[in-house]
Figure 1 (cartoon, rainbow over the protein chains, first blue to last red):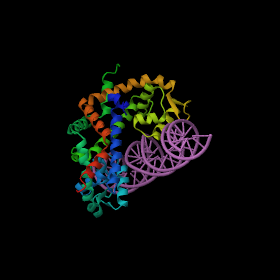
Figure 2 (figure 1 turned 90 degrees about the vertical axis):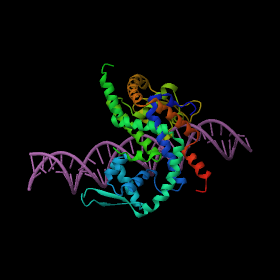
Figure 3 (figure 1 turned 180 degrees about the vertical axis):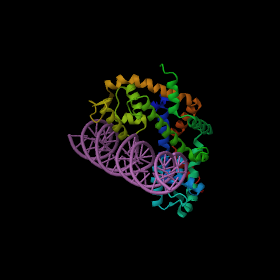
Figure 4 (figure 1 turned 60 degrees about the vertical axis):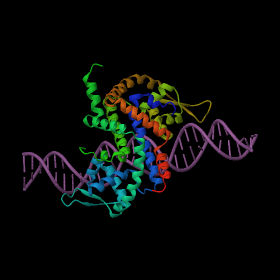
Length: 162
Length: 162
DNA sequence: ATAAACTATGTAACTGGTTACGCAAAAATA
DNA sequence: TATTTTTGCGTAACCAGTTACATAGTTTAT
């Protein structure tokens, strides 16, 4: 990677670089979970934290909060149930809804997980400049105001001639 | 997403935010390819540009340059061949190697693609602060010096007591 | 020259997500 | 109250990538 081709593309390679970064971080997270003997999938992390905070949530609520589709959440929750970390019951007020919670086992193991997650996030913190976090905030803000798709459309339709 | 849960996690949510950003950009790219009627897959973009620059490359070389595994490249190239955009022949000097090139059709359509890619990358440029690009460079640099995995290991082994 | 080690490609099976669809319950409307 | 629309969950089929493995060709070492 001496002369990184993607980097030479500048803004045209932005999406690819973000994807490469994301894939790399996820790859390392997997290895760290292995090494630290965290007995759950890395992508359960946020669900644990979310359910710790909110006590119980529906499938759709979790999906919205984390930015996944609901089938993705259903699959994750199913696995968490199989390993005894999650449970659910029908909402008595609306029988369409499944109220999902951590089990006692999940709550019991949380402190251990959190201690290990803390170590990882400290390493992230030492590596990631606060200025980058700020810039990331700004980009997310921009995107929430208008998606990249919309930006391109207005740009293209704005000057139809070229 | 008024109160974005992931954002509240600060550095503990960094990986998840990068993934969410990556997925969102890819999603929008797909829609833009549709809208702009770019008749190829978004992830062929870099391969087109790479083969334009290097004329011919092996599977492994492409994989290394783009940071994919070689089976991923094989699949992409197979599809590009099916649509007539790529071709390959055995390297006469080393019969294990497949030398991959753009076809004439690929080269012919490139200018049109590039014009459309230009529009997208301009919209990206208007959205992405140069400071973010700089911070991204620095993070990639940090990670290439020592992966997140290694950083955690040295951190943990460094002070074994806690 | 032979054997051992390595490299390049290819394939199979899996994974973590998606879209598209169906169904039942609830909410809105007539 | 009856009907239409919307919402929530679930499943099936798919997709882009991965890991693990096989095989054949090349290089290195003996």
